Length: 335
Image 1 (cartoon, rainbow, N blue to C red):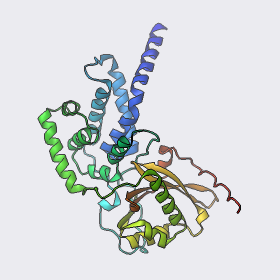
Image 2 (image 1 turned 90 degrees about the horizontal axis):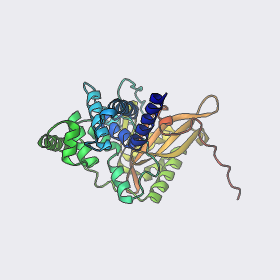
Image 3 (image 1 turned 180 degrees about the vertical axis):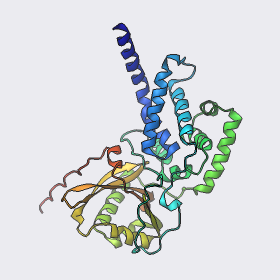
Image 4 (image 1 turned 90 degrees about the vertical axis):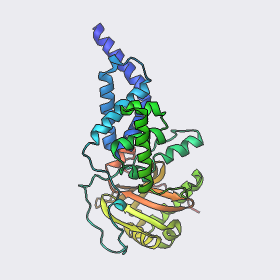
């Protein structure tokens, strides 16, 4: 009995000590893998391996460093012989005619996933901006072009800002070796993803107002309003459908065509993903009820929308903590 109580006590202590690191480990594994579901599996594997080795943990490094080393090794193993996770815009040219039929969904492609934001994670404005920059969809997509060890070195050093010696320890290489990996990763990343210095984010109130205007224009299939909200080189993509569109006019016409004829058939619930504003989209089905349809993640360029990535995967809704049934629309206030 005493042995059982001792094991329960050790498990409770392990859960208490590792619990605060779970969210950041999930985000780290997601950056490495590009899949929110696979990242959760890797976090579970990391914690299981840590628990099995907990009795031998001697505290020569911090618990956080030890967990990251285990997670890094798990991610590197998982990435062996695995293809990168793309977005539609990374696979081919855009379709010019917004009224052309779209291609069939390609579920066999291991598409990139979005990652849900946790409300109130950072109180410091500088930390919020840094967190958003390190999780942008564009960055996660570009990381997919890097070999696994280069990817890990860049995430550890440039995104998470781990000191060089600790990053080298996590990768099991020398400091000069991790610096070499980092330099090669930076060079390749610049080629895969142009700088986004011009994508200045609006303030949070302005961001919410822009999201509201986009939601209203999309729900009402208002081509004119959508056109005014988009940058000239705007992109619209919708994994797992490989078809995508580029250019303000084409995107506005196509986005409007995705909305049902009756605006009441659509419910849009604000959320956020990858440090970016997003909309959970519910569509009315033949049964008269609204059902989860897609999560639209918006990339903003100042006061305009530069990209819409509409992930058409209802399985994302529970991951985002979104209800299976959208909240009821409050009744209109009589004038």
